[in-house]
Image 1 (cartoon, helix red, strand yellow):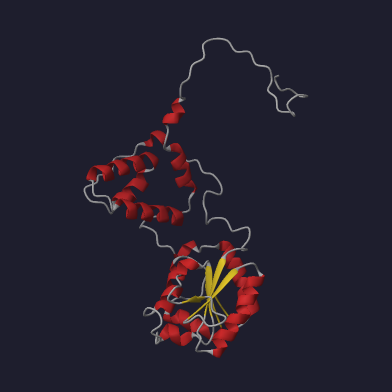
Image 2 (tube, one colour):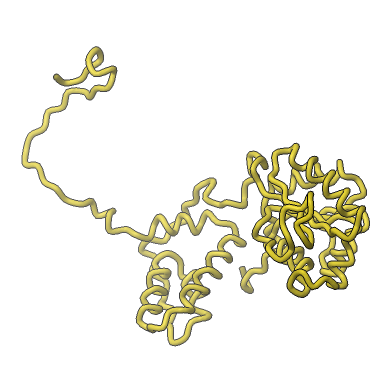
Length: 272
C-alpha cells in the first residue's frame, strides 16, 4: 500500500504522473571535479593555504615520474593557477600551464577553515606541563597546575626526566605533537638551558618548547621559567603567556586553547 498522511507514519510522497521514455544518464555536472576543490581552497586562510601547498610539495617531491608530476600540476591548475605554480616551484622538469579558468570561481563557505574559528570548548584537549624531578619547586608546581588544568576539562601530562610518582611522560617519549598547549614550571630552567641530563636526547626539552611554538600552539611559563623562552628566542606575544599567577595563566590558556593555532607564526611564500 502506498504511504500517505495516515499510512506509513507520515512518510509519503505526493501523487506523481510520469509519461515518456525513462533514460539513465549522468548530468554534465558529474564531469566537474574542480569546482568543489576550488571552493575549499577559497575558504582557507592564507596560512592554511600555505599548509596545503607545503603538504603537496612534500608528497609530490617523492614522485619519480616526470609525467605523473606534470599531470598532477595540470590538475591543480584546474583548481587554481597560483596553487599549481607554488607546488611546481619545488619540482624538477615540470611546466606550469597557463590558467584554465573553466571551473574557477570566487565561492567560499564557512567552517571549512579549521583555524579561522575558535573552538566551542577546550574540554578533551591535551596539555603538557614540563618539569624537572631535580627541583622540588618544579614538581610541586607541576602537581598543583596539573589539578587546576584538569579541572577545566583538559587531559594533562606532566613531563619530566623519569617516571617518578606525579610524572606521566618522560622527555625521551614526549613530543610537541602530543600536546595542544604546554607550560614550563619554575625550577626546571637548568634542563632547558644546560641540557645536562643524559636521560633524553641532547636538547630535547628545549626542542619540545620550540616545536610547540613553531606549530602555532599556545605556550607559556610560570614565574622564573620565562627564561626558558628567552633561551628559545621566543618573545611574549599572541599565544605566549608569562605570569607569576596560576589563575592568570589558566585564564590565558583557556582563551589560547580556544584559538587553537596562532597562524601569524606561520611563514608564507613571498607575495602571499
